[in-house]
Length: 303
Image (cartoon, rainbow, N blue to C red; front, side, top):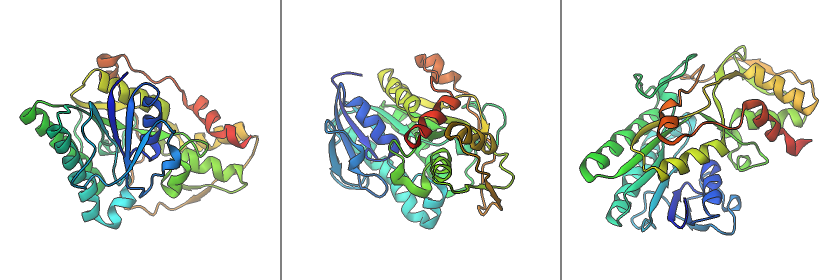
């Protein structure tokens, strides 16, 4: 993508800032964020920062492409105030896309979620049945339904990206997320500081860990191809939390055992794995950073 005017909502957050900084190398980029979790310190000087909420009446949507990443982005955040979660995740989505439409923008890439697949030890295709077990998942499914409406009724192109477990590490743009950061980042920081990470159950749960650099590239390609519909973004590989801890210890040269605790969450996805073939067929995208390399990158600042 080059010489485009771009809006990234949630643009000062973890994924959003990585995307905004990357796109700003060849485009005019606005990062909009209300700083609930994001921080403008994540952004390069080439990015224009706007302190605003996606539910505001006047947004800077006179752009060529909208990347809508703003959300209350976890089960826990959403359940603390489900009504506020719906306002941000659903109303904020509709508000942003409608303002973009009125300003003549017809290309949107937005974040949805892979957690709606539930527990899967086999790759999850976009065609499989999904279910909303939490308010967070319901809000992301609502986005997908509204995206279908904007496409059918207004002939817009909206690519819903079902991200799997995205990570980068506290040496990147994740540190501001604290307890909401990916477990790779949290566990690495704890182990590097001599603390035992807490694992739910026996640590056998698995995730399709996807590096943020691959996520950024997928989003850019989705916009370049003006994709419409739902696309998985993951690696088609999964690692258990126990395997993750072993990789971190190996990389840091430590030998810290995790502490196993009872899972306190009412709803918890035990296993995830993506089938990314649809995105690959549409754009040629495939992951380039394997998990072992990714863990090495996360650990590097501590060595």
